[in-house]
Image (cartoon, rainbow, N blue to C red):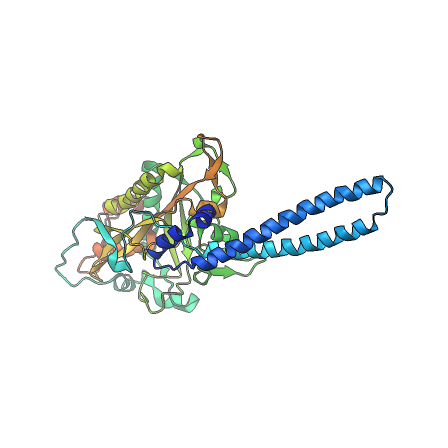
Length: 424
């Protein structure tokens, strides 16, 4: 969440920043709520002090043998007033917290301005798209013709936006996953973590998915409720919730491979064919927990680690700096990596690398003890796909296809496939 002190001290500056996202902050309503909070905080403190002082007076009167009936009645009246004041303070604090939880993160000054994704800025373009001597097929055609991708059977089992993989293509997806994990742990210094695929609501609130994006989640019948993770970012970041880390523990560089589950509530009619947008997909996720002064250098590092996956696979891609209106809710700055898909003749997102600064840490109460002063302060959190396995799978099939429908295996994947150089 946004720093509450900044929100109270300079709401106009916060409003100007959020306007770059296209978000309108009602400053007058926010200030009115803050005035109510201050009023009931002052009144609650006054009544508590009065009750404590009155209790001493009752004790003194009792010790002198005086009639304390009137004093007791006054004390009861003070107690009733305090109960009302505390109830009002609790209500206005809850309203303020709900308000704060709905506010997106402030944007970093380097984020480009823009009203939609058309204003995103291309930072780099790596590799040249392959020129085919035949009409390239899309990944669904390539997979279905050999029975390796089966959308029809998946539909009978679970409905739309699922797939069954078989044989060599199932092995190819597993090889991609293993390649990414090995690259990040052996060469980039990440610690591999196995995490729960079900999380409590407070974990999703901590990383910003709740309360705003509940419709995008799959809830499980349980008491209390549990949710299937939309990304491994959620359990990975929450490893430091309600903790105070020492400077020696930082930075933390974590990687996890998990399935991810999303309802795609806002994607009706989009990418209904194939594996581009599914309810269940695989992802290798990178999370870094760092000291605040180091977070923007860490963002460039994390982006380079995600790029290394695409470079190793020799896939053409580009890097986009997202404009204000396209940056995600919890992020202060985001780079998207987009891979070239021959069947669509365009680049498609395969990774988002984001610096959330202290936004998630405040929600999770994740802090570090700053040696300059020794006081606990919010950490900075970063996350990025390293990368989306399903979309990497799609990109390999399409970019490495042959006219006969077979697929050349990228060299870095061959050791994971027993030396196989061609599928089909």
